[in-house]
Length: 94
Image (cartoon, rainbow, N blue to C red; front, side, top):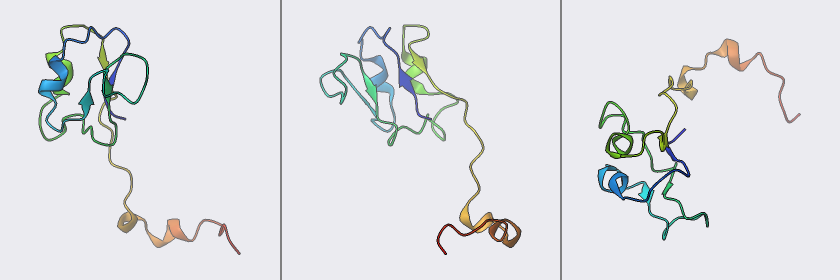
């Protein structure tokens, strides 16, 4: 899950300036019509490889405004799935 900006945002812009991948937009460019800042989850990397925690949350003066899930382990990749797991399923199409 990507970072989410909640409705207690005061629209100060600190998060936009700190995002290393430019995933945050202000209320004018938000796809929602709720007047809040927005984080594009297809662009947000939760600052993995950039910072210890999302930079936007560190810069935000409003506690609890920016939330995120802890970074989880990567799901199994196609190459990591063994024959034992591949043959255990019934085919969807016959």
